[in-house]
Every structure is written in C-alpha cells, then in structure tokens.
Amino acid sequence: MKTAHLYLLLHVLSSASVLVHTFEPFTTTVVLGVGAALGRAIYNYLHESCDPKWIAFNATGLKADLDSKLFGQHIASRIILKAVNGFMSNDNPKKPLVLSLHGWTGTGKNFVSQLIADNIYKEGMDSSFVHVFTSELHFPHSSQFDTYKSQLQQWIKGNVTNCAHSMFIFDEMDKMHPGLIDSIKPYLDYYDKLDGVSYRKAIFIFLSNAGGESIIQTALDFWKAGRDREEIELKDLETVLSLSVFNNKKSGLWHTSLIDKNLVDFFVPFLPLEYRHIIQCAMAEMKARGLQPDQNVADQVARDLVYFPKTERVFSVKGCKTIESKLDYYT
Image (cartoon, rainbow, N blue to C red; front, side, top):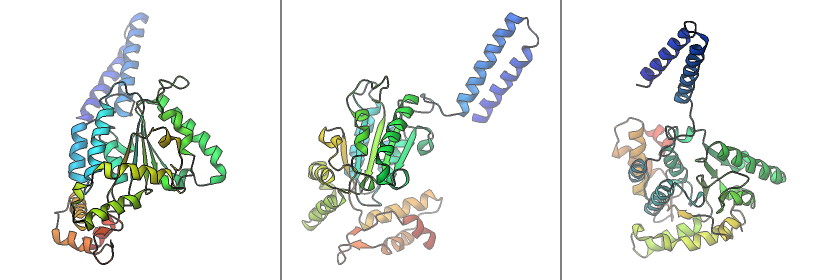
C-alpha cells in the first residue's frame, strides 16, 4: 500500500514537471508551486516528522503489550498504563512526565521503556525523537562533569525545540555522576516556557538498579509470610524506595532536587522474578522468534538460572536478562 501511494505521488509530480514547459509564466509559477508541495508531501511521507502521522499514542496497544509481554510486574504495569495514558490524553499538561523505574537487572525496566516508545512513536525506539543516554557511554569521566552538564542541557533544549513530544531515557542511573541529572531540573519543573521553549509535552524516564535491595526485601518479607506477591501494593514500596534512592551516594538521584521538589511523578518498582515468570519469558521469546513454544525447553532454560535464597531458590538473580542466549543453546 505504501509503495502504491508513493508511486502515485511520483507520477503526479512527474506530470507537474512536464506541464511547466507547456504553460505561460503565470501558470508555470502555479504548477511549480504544486510540484514543490508534492515534493514536500513525498519527503514527509518518507521521513519521520513531528506530527500525528508519526507520533500518536496507542493506549489499547500499550495495555495489550503490558498484559501479554511483561511478566510478574503487576504494580509497574498498572502505574505505567495510568501514567502514560493520563499524560498523553492531556493536551495541556502542567509539566513533563517523569518516571523513575527501579529494580534488579532483568526485571523489565528497559523493556517497558521500549513498549512505551512503541506505542507512541511509529518508529518506536528507532524514532529520531527518542533519545537514550547511558552513563558509561555518554558520561564516562567525572572530571568532565561541567562539560556534560552543558552538553546535556543543550541536547535536551535542541531536541524539544525540534519536537515537543520528545522522549529521553536515562539508563544506568545508579552509575551516573550524582548531581548531573540536577542540571536538567528546570526542564522538568512547572514552567510554561524557558527561553521560549515549552518542555511540558516531553517524557523523561530514569532506569536504575538503585533501590533494588528495598524491593527485594519487601518481596522476601511477603513470601516468608506466606502472602502472594500480587498482594504487594505501591504504598508498600514507594516511600522506602524514594528514600533509599535519595540517600544512595552511588545513585544519579542522590540528594537530587528532583526528589526534594517532587518532580518525579512516579517511582515505579520492578519486583524480582520467580521461576514461573522465567517460564513465561522463555515461552514468549520462542513465540517472538516464530518458534512453537515448548514447555520442556522453557523448563530447561528456567532450571539453568541462578536463584536466591540459595536453598529455597525463589527469585531469579538475573531475571529474564539471559533468556535469549539460553534459548540459543537449547533450541
């Protein structure tokens, strides 16, 4: 269908160029104008632009993805869906959406960021309006702290100027220089505009292992008490999580004014995954590869992982992070 539409545009544009040599000067000007307009249409058809054709929130799609692809994260799924849905449905938000995702490796933080991008941007994570920063790649040297601050501010300002609906993902926040994230605080606050630029429609997502110990301890306490993990609620984790992140000197959010000034909209906990969730991850990965999901293979993969506490083997140490490589071995 896309090829057919493009062919039609090219055909009309070609006809317009032929007509240029046929009419009088006044008519030629009109035809040239039509040709230029068609040229812009073709360019916009092929190149991503900051408009509803390329940026349109799919609330139904996000819910379906969270329900069918994210396992063992009932708290995170509920918060993410409500937060993103509410923000994207508001034509005039008072501030950017700021989400801070916390939990051990392999629990789904990066994956959720991808699902959000996939259901907002037509190009998903490949969109030119989605920007990912990792501390070790983009901010490796503490001696360059001032330079990083300036570069980060300029990068965010430039991209939001280009497209109000920009998304910024900061991975490995627990490895980021404390205080660096404070340099973008003005962009996350309740300002109408800063230097003529409004940041209110942007989305900022922070990913961190910081606070993971608090989340794990809560999950262990529920398990030891014989309570189902689905009984864990946000209120059981949010306060202790924000405090542990704020007071963690190894966290990029250590003593940050973002927390102090309540600019983080939600601290989203990701629970440690159990054996049954690893099975679900393995089955989903097989399906994604076009393979027939095999329960026996999924069991082999799940048994091969390391769990804690050692004797009870309740929670996976690496979550679903190594599922892909394990499947390469067993399939």
